Image 1 (tube, rainbow, N blue to C red):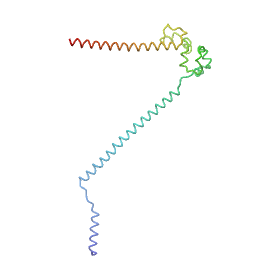
Image 2 (image 1 turned 180 degrees about the vertical axis):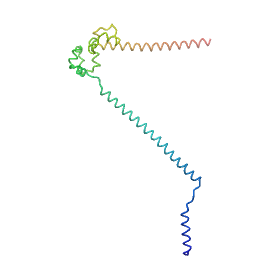
Image 3 (image 1 turned 120 degrees about the horizontal axis):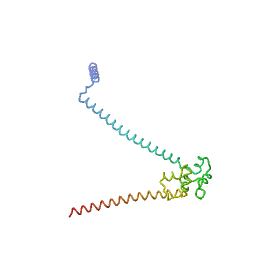
Image 4 (image 1 turned 180 degrees about the horizontal axis):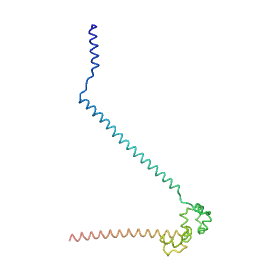
Amino acid sequence: MSERQARIRRKSEAEEVKTVKKKSKAEIITNIVICVAIVAVLGLGGWAVASKYQNNAAQTQAEADSQDTSADAAQQSVPTIEEYAQNLGMTGEEFIKEYGLDSNEEVTPYMEMTLATEYMTLANYAKMIGSEVAEIRESMGIDDTFADDALMGEIFAAQADVTEGAENADADTADVASEDNTEATDNTAENEAE
């Protein structure tokens, strides 16, 4: 090949490289649609994953909060007789003697106050909270069948029995009403059949 032919060939190859094939409008639109579809899929996928992680984060936070609440409740325990007495400026033993709890061997300065009140008489309970017996009777709904020297545990038990009896009576009334309604329905069906 001659030198002239080689130059022509190099020149034509260079022109082919320089000329870029122009894309048609259809190819451009197709490329844009593909790009938009890819971005949309990535966006939806990111949104779905993000909401999942947000829900997990919220659930984890709620569990942590409930654990904190449980820990706080455990720390806020019921005071013992000793702790309650110290707030009143006396020892646990002095409190036990002052409020008539010394007659019961089960009562110690380390007993919880909620349990200790069950061993107090109505009069001593009123004295402890700084109230009159009549006011306690009225506020707690205690009738005159209990004397002032009745133990608060007995009073609490009687009130629980009355409350339980009332709930059972309500349930019995509902059962009777249901049975009456069933009988009425049966009677109506028999009358229609005749």
